[in-house]
Image (cartoon, rainbow, N blue to C red; front, side):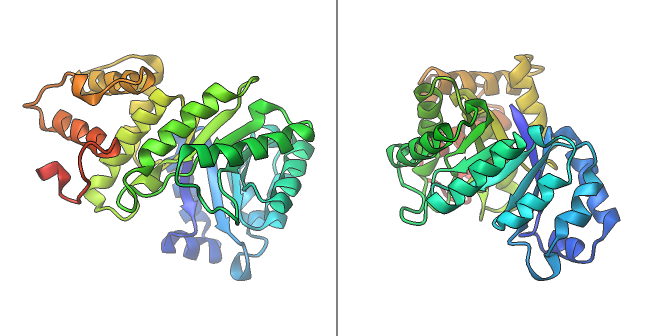
Length: 303
């Protein structure tokens, strides 16, 4: 699985301030944190005002890194791609299914032979509530990309994760969408998610647990890439352990069994675990929350 560090993101007030002030030490320290990832997402939003032309300063700080150019400003994405020596490995983040943005960014991805992240949403539909609605938009994007001659392995479809505490049913819809994408295209296309979105708005003590368990479940569904909080080194270790199928302890074995459960369309009730181990019990509770078997509350691990 390709792991993309999300930690340079202007939603964070400290990150935004550092970018506006061109604080090189701050950015370099964040880059060290993201060394455990395969790529780095540079989320600069609309890149206006103090952040106008910010990639001119920011991108050279990440020489030889694989970058994901994350902006709503198409001109800013173009500026970023011009600055790298390895555009064929980089990502455009992202297009929607809207014709104007889709057309321009597909052409740009072809020009630089880079990867294109495509969101299952449009201005008209927003984010569809179910997997079928998401797939309609994914097929539309795919057809447009194929018409223009794009390589299928350069497309990364994002089914879009909504926070668990906003709509508990959406975790299953994301898993179902990933399964459908992996089954529907030949040659194969790729999938990607912004993993941390699942735990947005939760107490901080729950976020890493929910992110890790959902990441394991998505791995079982066939996910190809995830944009993650690189500060969560345990999450990175878990994904690497799953890829190598090399468990070091009973918790690792449980994670492997959960991934296999999702892959085989199994039921969490059939997964064995040590009920006396609080960590294992909380992992099982989290799977039940994510699959809708139990109702979410901020105190679910204490019940």
